[in-house]
Length: 150
Figure 1 (cartoon, rainbow, N blue to C red):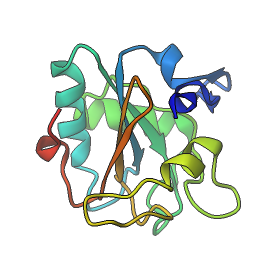
Figure 2 (tube, rainbow, N blue to C red):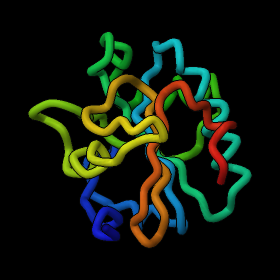
Figure 3 (spheres, rainbow, N blue to C red):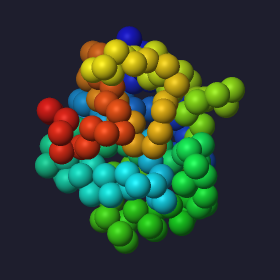
Figure 4 (spheres, one colour):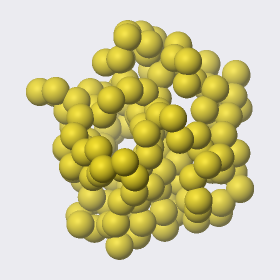
C-alpha cells in the first residue's frame, strides 16, 4: 500500500506532487473547508503539524459538503493563514467522493475508521494518518486533531 505515497496530487499552483515529495515520514491528509462548523480544527491541525517534526499535515479543500468551501485557491490560503496561522500545504480544491473523486481519495475511502465505517467521505475534516509503510488510519470529523494519537 506504500504506492499511496507516490500518487500524483495537484498543488494550488497547478503543478503535480506526491505525499512523499512533500516530505516527512508520516502524513495527515484532511479534506478541509473554510465555512464549516469543524473549520476551527485548522487550529489543532496547525499545532500538530508544528509540533511533530516528521509529520506533514496536508489539506485538501473540498466544496462537496454544504458548499462550505466556495473560495478560490488564493482566498482559501489567505483565510487559513490569517485566521489559523496555517503553514502546512494546502493542495488544489478537489472532489473526495463521487465520480470526480481523485485517485488518492479512491484509496483512502476504502480504509475503515475505528467504528468500522469505510466508503465515501462523509463530511469535511475527515482525517487519514498515513505511515511511511503505506498503512493508514481513518478518523471521522468528530475526532479532533488533538485526539489523534501520534
